[in-house]
Amino acid sequence: ATVLAEPTADVKWHAGHTLGGGDTNDWFKIRLEAGKTYYFSSADHATEVGWWTDTYGELYFDPNDPPLVENDDGAGNGGFSIVYRPKRSGDYYLHVGSYWSGEWGVYDLEYGLVGDDVWDPVDDTPEGATLLTPTETEQEHSPHLLSYHEEDDDRETVVYEDVDYFAIDMTAGVTYVFDAEPIGGTYFSGSLQDASGNEVSYSSMRPGCTPG
Image (cartoon, rainbow, N blue to C red; front, top):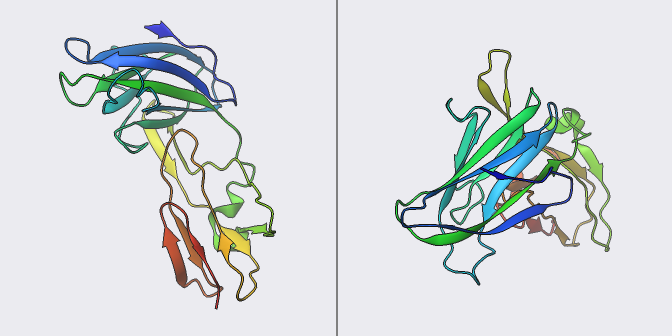
């Protein structure tokens, strides 16, 4: 297994990997610390080396046991996305495989450490929505963590999923734009609702509307 450098809050890339022919599996070894949240994903940034390939990912503590978590296509465009919070520190193993047996192509591995979502779990309901104040200058509100995998007390992997709510005071006739920039390639969707909870705009890419 290729040993990966320690994950940090800055994105790390391990680029230019090839899969195909008789080589359909790559293994990586990485040290993870209990209680921290990490992400791993594959991306197609290595197109100058060759054709991009459809990959899937599996995370193990012991490669002889079933994977703790696995994903295929979570990052879109055939890439996988895994977000995991270990309860035990140690060496973990990431397996990257080609979805199509014998398919030749390239991929880049992206990984890093996810920061703490200080607004959770308060913002999981409309009553606890985080107040935003839009301006003409682009603003950022981060990091937010929507879903991750973690071991429970019986060493079984469970997934935690939730939604985040934000409250925005809007002026009629003004156009507002809201973006979600994913960490690790995962796709998100956004729903804009009025004060009564009625949906007025929805998008999985770039929601925006002019309130009436």
